[in-house]
Image (cartoon, rainbow, N blue to C red; front, side, top):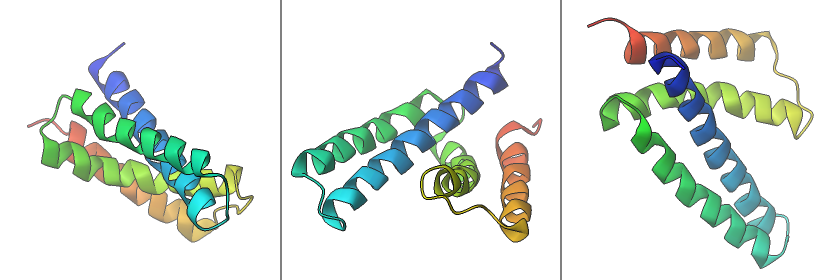
Length: 109
């Protein structure tokens, strides 16, 4: 696996941990799910804090780039889980975010 592919896998894993954990906490706190769901969400959010530490870049760069990945993953989560399809502006915005990720994280220095 190339370094860029590994980095992208880590971004997706971090995003799934953050969005999934946040979703579980949301279900517990806002929608009355069991406290076990909230606790599981907290554990997954803890994993979110660990996964990005495996990125090759320093903290600021990795988290700045992750922000762009998060935007796209959040739109996809909303579509897949809540059934709200992204509109054309969501798609354009997501593409701009991913372009920013490419520049911040992978542009040769």
